[in-house]
Amino acid sequence: MLHRSHRPVFLALALLLFAGTIGSPPAPVAAAPASAPASPFRYFPETGHNIGARIKTFFEQKGGIGVFGLPLTEVVQEGNLQVQYFERAKFELHPEFEPGHYVSIAQLGRQLVEGRTEAPFVPRVGVNDAQTSYFPQTGHTIRLGFRNFWLNNGGLQVYGYPLSEEFSEISPDDGREYTVQYFERAKFEYHPETPNNAIQLARLGAQALDRSGLPEAYRKPMPPITALGHATTGYYGSITERVNNIARGAARMNGLIVAAGATFSFNTALGSASSEDGFVEGYAIVNGKLEKVTGGGICQISTTMYRAVFNAGLDIVERRPHSFVINFYENIDGFDATVFAPYVDFKWRNDTSGPIYMFASTDPKKATATFSLYGFDDGRTAKMVGPVSKNVKTQGIANWQYDPTLKRGEVRQLVHGRPGKEVEMRRVVTAANGKVIHNDNLQSKYRPWEDFYIYGPGVKPPKGVNIIAPKTVQSKQ
Image (cartoon, rainbow, N blue to C red; front, side, top):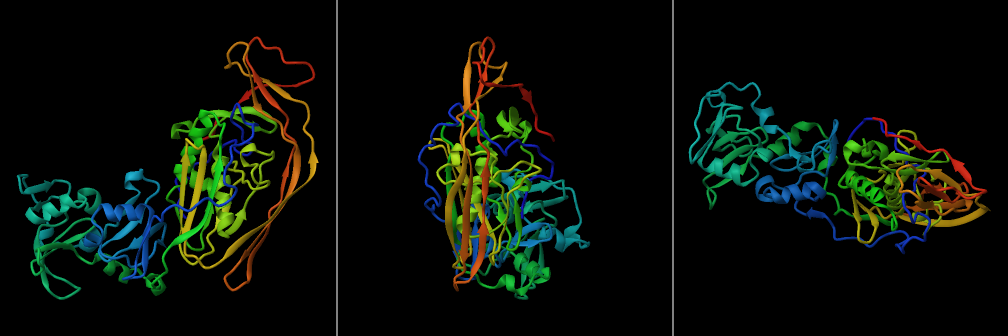
């Protein structure tokens, strides 16, 4: 599983609210699966493998088959990295880097030249001119056709610095001699026998796969990747701070890949969600009090992810409901998942035979968040049984809390109270052969939630309400 940061985060996300109209009826939203978007994947029947998400974008923008060849595996776990092998390259996923560097090419060229001391590998002093680029970082030069290919197909980001000069070498693939040049992430070959005197990348990806020790099954042709589960939730009525945090939380999850057999932790994947990360402060209920915290709104993302995982029939490892009914999720009772890092997490396991790709997005105009999960469809189906509500308990007296940041005389109702209740729900997941593979008892118990007001200077709360002292909490790093 990929994740961004291991820094501990304290987010008061378990009891979310953030809107002047927090208790007003939510805008109509699709209850469970959303309509599936166009597939972000590309299947290669020649080898029986898929590329998708950021890898697909990188592959197609940097030259496609003509540069990298065909995919030889799916995305696989190799040590601490997720990688995908192609004929002429090995792609690595680095979610800890900036978005533009999320996908990079492994330094297979550097591995091959390590220890070589022949003349072409000895650093030297060079010059730059119209046909030549000299790199003092490695002491080598790119010239003429190789230089044009390097510049026109991704340059430094894709291939890295040159590690040799041009020279002649026998190819281990076909035993023929070619003019070649080594780079950190590639080996260029000049093929004069081709119609266009083509420059090609050597088959370093295929050679590296042969040396990798990965099981032979990883090369086995796979079916096309298809949609497994979708979900959309609405956040109509949320104030600007909550909308910001929802969008940032979705961006953190978008494009992540969960390897077969891996358990996904929402809190680990989210990482730090402080003000330094662009998350903002707003109100949340913490231990029955209204407090200002950084990062509120993230439970919109965990809940939407939970619904997509539920619909896809994947293994739910850890899920807890909110302590109170949240109006944004009332379209289906008991269908929410709270997170409260580092204490409460949402976890699920990829119990399919291949990687699962996660796509998350928000639509500010419609005030919706959407998750889509893609992988190998093994024919499983998920059925919701319920929900059924019982033991409904009425709410108590209203809470009023002073907020010195409000205008003089201002009063805002942040919570329109909800009764407490217990919700019974089950999920039955059936395999293609009719065998039940998951029979989940997903119970939720919600406390009554009182009306909650904040008031500014010069306001005298009405008689008979509960006055709560204000408190400010910052996220911990």
